[in-house]
Image (cartoon, rainbow, N blue to C red):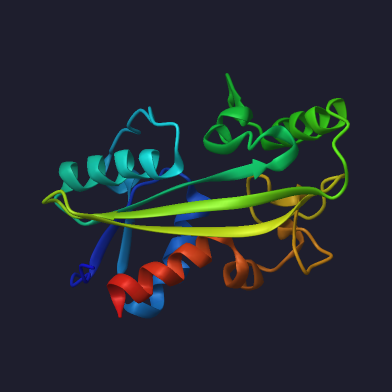
Length: 202
C-alpha cells in the first residue's frame, strides 16, 4: 500500500458538508484539504453502477486535472427492503430543477417502503467508498459501512442527506440528532477514513 507523503490533498467534491467533515478528519494529520471549487473543477459524469467505480472516476479526474493527490468518496444508503436502492443513486433521488431536496428524497424513500409493506425494522446501511488517487494513476481503495434502520418521521437538524431518517444500530437517535463529533466517530465515512489513515497516513 502506498504511503501519502504530501501536505496538500484535493477532496474531489462540491458538497460543503462532506468537505467540512473531511477537513475535520484530516486536520490532526497536518494536511490542507482543498476542494473542486478551489480549482474550478467540473463534476465528472458518474457512469459506473458501483460506489467504487464512481469514486475512482472522481478521484482520477481531479488528480489528473490538478497534479495533486486526490481523494474522492462515493457514498449512499442501501435499503434491504428496496433491493439495495437507492444505492449509487442516493443523491439522484434528491435532484430537482432547483437543486437537491433531501426532504423530498426521504419522503420518497419512506413512501416506497410503505408501498412495499416492508417489515420492521427496515434495515439499511450507509456505505462510503474512499479512493485516494495519485497523478501517476495509482490508487488505493477503502470501504466503510454503518448498519442501521430507516425510521419515520424525520428527526434532528444536524448532518446532511438522509441523516434524519437513519438510526444506527445500538442507538435510539438518528444521525441528524447526534453532534458532529459523535457522528464522525461512528459514520460510514469515518470507518472508511480509519482504514485510509491506517493504510496511507501512518
